[in-house]
Amino acid sequence: MSQLLYAVVPAAGVGARMKADRPKQYLLLEGKTVLEHTVNKLLEFTEIEEIVLPVSPLDGYISDLAIHSHRKVTLCEGGEERFHSVLNGLQTLLDKGASPDAWVMVHDVARPCIRLEDLKNLYKNASESGVVLGLQVRDTMKRTQENALVANTVDRTNLWHAQTPQLAPLGTLYDAITQSVTDGIAITDEASALEHCGIMPRMIAGHPSNIKITQPEDLEMARAFFRLNESKNHQE
Image 1: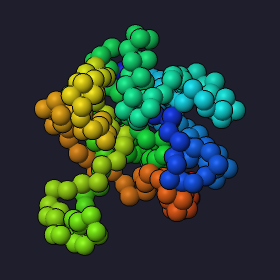
Image 2: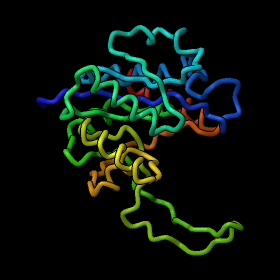
Image 3: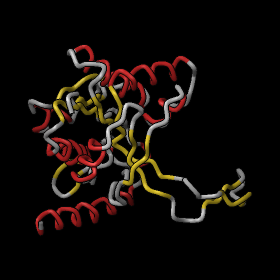
Image 4: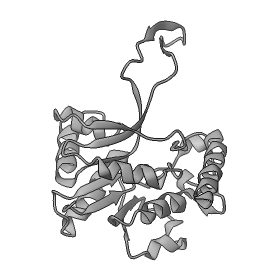
């Protein structure tokens, strides 16, 4: 592909639901922080020219990590919400001269088990309208009322669990998030901003191991998946 590829990894969150003594991206997983595993996996994908990490201005951990000074890693100030951090990351790339036509992957910092083959597949399927990793829903889906009583069963046909990375042209994504913010739209992921602007991203299958660490028990699950993926890599 002629366009360059960049990545933005919003890392300014505090991860309050983890109930830990530090943001979840700095919890240890197999001897390294979650953030290090996530960024290192992206660095393995050599097509990525640069990774922008929007971090909190009060972050007291990132400077102690080796990736802080990696030549492909750039820090910028994160925002109050995830989409603010993503927007700051995209703006940083544009300010440094990245073309609006370049590709950009936005990946959750709390998804350290992303596989290299899924990154390659996402890039291979790059589309002007965007592309999203996800998993098709397999379980029966229920919608409940506020009192937790089941109201109805939801048709799971064509339902997906969205994952990250999500890939789109840099300028297109920047404009979509900016417009969504202006319109007061809740931006839950990059695809939701594109959707608001009438753009229909393509969904492609990811892998179950690409979980997002949100609750304390997720860290143990990530540890199991991480060991499994690493074991497979060594066997290959």
